Amino acid sequence: MMKKLDNLPLFACYCLIAALFFVPLSAALAKADVEPLAVVEVGPGIFVAPGAVERVNPENQGHIANLGFIIGEKSVAVIDTGGSLLVGQRLRAAIEAKTDLPIGYVINTHAHPDHILGNAAFVNSGAVFVSHPRFNDALALRGSFYLAANLELIGKAAFSGSGLIPSTQSAVGEMTIDLGNRVLMLESFPTAHTDNDLIVVDRKTSTAFLGDLLFIDHVPALDGSIKGWLAVMARLTARPFAHVIAGHGPVGGPLVQPWPFASIPQKRYLELVASDVRRHIAAGHSLTTASKDTALSEEKRWLLFHDFNTRNATTTFSELEWE
Figure 1: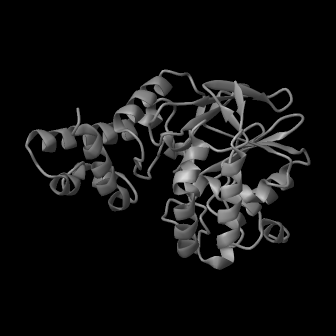
Figure 2: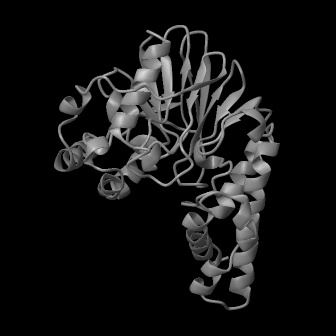
Figure 3: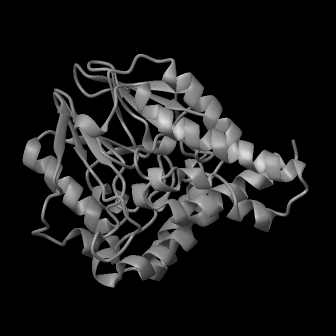
């Protein structure tokens, strides 16, 4: 089922924010001669541009998430667009190097900046922007912060022209789109990694883009509900996906276990965070104590552990103290 956006004043707010922070989108889109992102063909007509497992910085230009596109017989679907206009432009250049077909859809798996701030590169493509029903609310709540923070982290040279592009259609529950003899299933979920997570499944190959519902090597980052995330993962691990693409981490080869085994490290980590936090709450410990002593046995198993683990414990404490 698809739901059209009917909140046009909200869209106007996004455009105003972009105008306040950056050069006009039309000027930014005129930028030419960008280097296409390196992509890996993970299945017939399915390409992924792996992001660096790093924090956002000027060198990676905001390309820290795994981005993708799927080519049908009539059109192309883009799955996430990166953390800056420049990354989005480079992704579009990579698409145009593989096919002359039009871009029919830009699908955002959730509203975190490393997945959406390249959307501006596709505003003149004629594509429909599709996301979770709560995606636009998330942009309205945090969008101005995302723009200011990422401008500072990436620098004006790479970030200039980046803006907030809201979805124009929402995937309510499950919906399908047809790229021409290639049907994609989109599914929105209850609060998990965020409150606006969506996955994309290519029915032809049973390849699933799970967005940040799955992290590999990169420590999971919680911005929703730890109980909800574990519940959603239990649903997903019961499905017979032939191949999965995580939001962060390797996308193929010996570093990626078959599904559902690829989800085991994340499940172990999240369950440990929850159990450690429950232990602290039961002992009457403070949030500060819990945040410094949760899931420490996982430290050597994850990249960027200290960048996110304390925040994960804090978010979990705030949720579980009311159980």
